[in-house]
Image 1 (cartoon, rainbow, N blue to C red):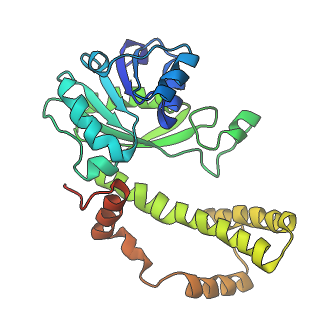
Image 2 (tube, helix red, strand yellow):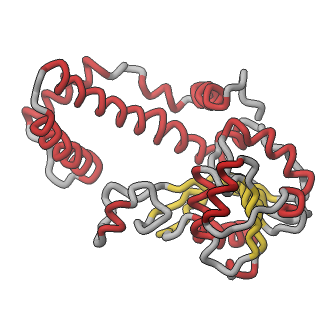
Length: 285
């Protein structure tokens, strides 16, 4: 399927994620309708030479409707948008939390897809300054995308993948999983664990500089290099850690990590995490 043959309604086109998607969709010949409610978002679109459309007109006969709005707003926005969609069209969200929690307005005659960017890998071979600068993805550095479709119809995933590869371009591959698997990946693996560890690393650096008094340039030089070595050794086995390093690692693990930390992969903890993220009492699935 060719992206240029599709009609696409982008809801939240002038927002943080919406702008990234807009920048890629506007390079195609697809019939893209940009919808934005905020004054600032509409101004950003106008500055880019793009006109906005009313949601009702944009959605009515669109092949694909992309909801590029915050997770906490997806339920309400979907209640407004879904009744206006045409039968057989695809609603696409960017994060799995609201869909997993059962917050999206549902119709039997439309398709539901969630597609989340993996962001450029820490192990990505970058060759240009633009690729080095693009740490988030969607501009110059290639990235993977992980997606889930409610339907098992390959025509749905094929049409969705055409849009996904464009809106998150450049894309290496699109990996199709179940919605549950996508929810375990995001938030559990990449936010509850990985992003939390990233925040902890930042705290540790600041403690080294501000409390211990190590000069920041020296601390950052040793720290940033060892972050790369730690990831390469632990995840790829590039250069095995020394015996002394393993002793320090085990000591640190005993001091910092709870023995029962793997409970974050329990369904009950996943439900609790998503409920907290969406500011709801409990998931409704």
